[in-house]
Picture 1 (tube, rainbow, N blue to C red):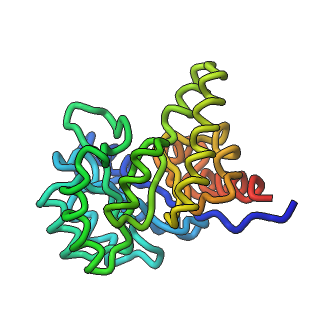
Picture 2 (picture 1 turned 120 degrees about the vertical axis):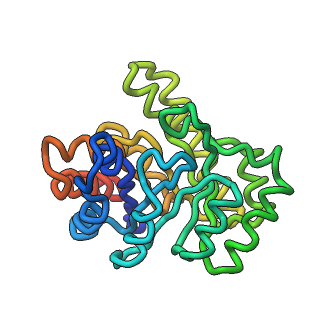
Length: 249
């Protein structure tokens, strides 16, 4: 079989900020984590500026724009406030995600089909400003078609259900979720959308997803920050990079 193209790794540094904010002060520094991730082989840095600022702060985004040599993927809710911040900074990419204040983390994909007109108008200025627009969605054909119609250039498939099923030992469910993501990766690619995948990926679950021929980028954060406690961030990222590269062959 021909080797697949190189798969990019985006490292989400949100939970470095979570640890910092648990006590207050300046440490650990998300910007330092971002630079370590760059050196370890990350192709991009992801940061989610939530409306309640529970982890990443406005100052973090400003700092990342100043210090990064790799692209910033700015995760954001579809609100006027976040649009204004993105238009001020003009990051390489913006990923539109659903956001509920009561959730611990992003619990599912964005409902694009139901809000198609609003989202089309919302992302147009971001595209005009030169940002690549990604939509975080479930592996659902209806949502992918809607993301394509509104003018998104990228979709990021939510891999949380697949990862949860694996770690809970529900292997039939895991395999169904994996197959749905595989089929929808092909479907989205055939529409001309770039395919990314993210949420909940670990060393145990990454390789079947990394093997999708259409996948161009994986975004991984919480697991890597957790592993960094035991291995160090550089080593944690390098092992993920190794597993991803191995899966592409």
